[in-house]
Image (tube, rainbow, N blue to C red):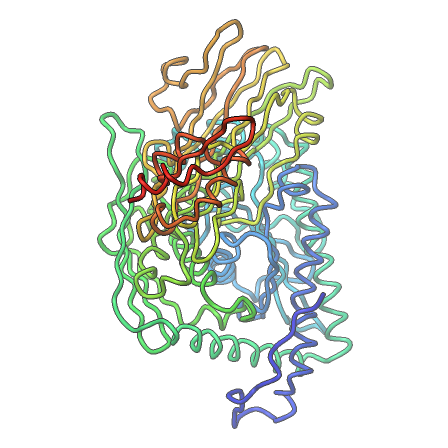
Length: 603
């Protein structure tokens, strides 16, 4: 399968470029080659990595930049990362200096305050030289499964400052002209709880860079530096023009929306996020002025995360064939005041910003645009990654292990369709670890995994369902941490649609009868943010993800559709009656709509 550019190039003429450089066939060939390089980087990551977070969940992204630090191409991996990496790489080049990067160098960087995402997100970058001249940079951004810090798995949910979150690396050399920078490797391995995983995953990342470097050389051998540069520049300009055409389809105006992040402080507080979206003649200004100041909690986010969430939201409502390169981002301006929850400053933590706040920002931007383009926007997703981290010594191998697990959520109902069930939150294309891999690699038994009845928000188009899974510890001890959101506030519906059910994180100690909250079982300050809890053999945890909001009035849903939902177990008889006004007659072993009662209920 190949991507292609439209053959209509009516507005691509430019007086300062040769006519043959605008040949749509040549542009399509080069475009596909550039994107293909990034895809092959991802394949290399999957096959070479040690951790399921890469091989199964694909929590990484691969990108190609020109020598000026402009994004030439990206692949379809994690949206939260490919937006933020634009800032990370530009910062890295500016700080290190492109002139100081030599062939064979690899630089690593995960500092959230240097244009980054959150601290587990590590970027590796390698310069690509051709005939002795710098041509491009190949880069990989990936979520490392263990980075030290106060909590196993690099998700210190209760952190109050960045120093508790893990080992923070400014731009430093992993490799210098093809040779290991042993001092940096020793520092990393000494600070990570599972150095074997870190060693293997970092080498997988570097292998992806090597593959990309080789493919770039092959591309230049075939087409030449001048030709590839010329077409790459034109592709960026073309993407900008295309994006502006898409944005002109949105009515000019100012659109506002607000929502809040849940807070675990006592007494509880809300961290409000407010946005004003200004649409004007093919340009977009997204302004988060008025959002709350940053707090001593992990749901602060960096500017890179905020900008990435905006790009992600806009890409949801424009033509997906727009080339995703530097040009596509030019018409979009993002304002986020420093020191706010949307642009965190040192030393406040931000590990939850990329997993919890990004999808909330995404929904807030689309919530504002729902007033302009209601037929293109869905109701709120579940909006939490349901981060569940754990580690310990495996009873079968005697080796230390660590894993970062997340669950899907329900997506919001949309114009013309119900929301998707149990799908990864919109800041990633990541898949949950399959049950078979989970039980093979880690000392848990997975007793159940199912969709949650009634978790989707009622509506003319129903919200998607969240999930429930029950895990039992089969090791003497496992240390767990977790970071959830949407535990007290429902994902919202649109245009009369109802809110969805919230998330839950419960535990049942061995010998107990009932699942209870972590606060009830262990006295934690929060039910949604816990760190370093010691589970014992026989203990069980229940992970429940939220559903998506409903779209449109529930009374407008066809009764036959409600009957089908009940038959499939998506909606209970009670919710059919209370939320949809549909009475189900289940006598004689066959369910049917009681049209008389339904008419009276809806009347």
